Image (tube, rainbow, N blue to C red; front, side, top):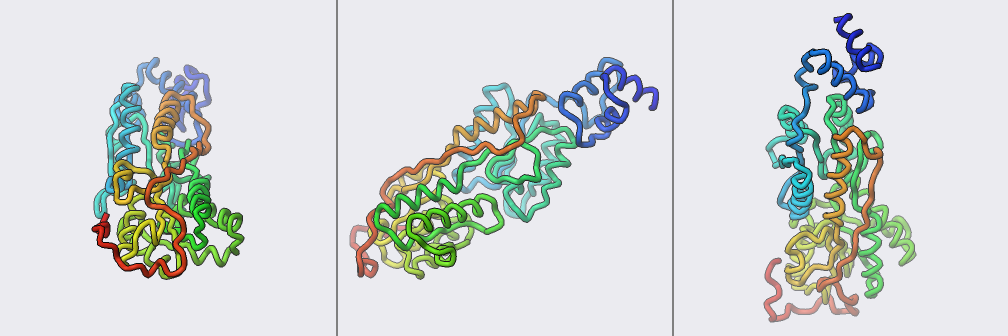
Length: 355
């Protein structure tokens, strides 16, 4: 083994310690150095250890948390198309309640010798999760890129929408319509996108309406990123006198509309609602949803570009690439209701069906 290490080290032009690190899948070796060592193995006729055999150019794993929220299939489609154009085959792995965890899906993909993995809204966005799993993946020589959520503990390219700017766009729009009691319906506090949306909310509510931190905190409601979660959050915010609600997803926004209708209130006459994502079909709801559009195409293509650079041994900077969202104004926002308007009787237009 010693002679072999010396031969490989001489052929690759590196130290025996470096050869040992590569063969044992240890971190801390540059991608180009790793490739030199593996090339030396090939030249000298040694077999590569199983886990270091040349990865098929073919497969790239894409791990998403679920597919019920239409934003995830939309991202998966963009990423899949971009990979296919580059000659790769995307393998979509989805977490389901009670099904495979992110770690199990990752292991399954690594076992299939994928060339790399793109994680969308994974554990990297959860501040309570252990980030060492990603360093272990790097140690195995698997390139990866992380979408939505950032951790300074992970060395990889991150792709994110600007969540603070998104909330600023929504609140500025509502303030221009005369709203003063504006609520924010978001998911659990441990997620990076939620933390950033709340930071943006505090900043813009302070600037636009002069509210204190305590006053703004009362207008933030945590729930789940689901229709039911949005319904519960909007109900709580309406109880606090909110005339407008900014939601952290389009699904939550549909729940907010349902909550208003459950009280015989009309959107947008009695309650203005802003969504987040501009997921497919959301322009066709009743009323069509005002929302913040995530730059899905730009983000998906950037994720693929960054991953292919990692695979090619010329890694993109291990930092966060932030993409600007845009406000899409449709029919779910209007001027703030005047005094007494919120007790309006239900109209007979039939517009109270659930979205």
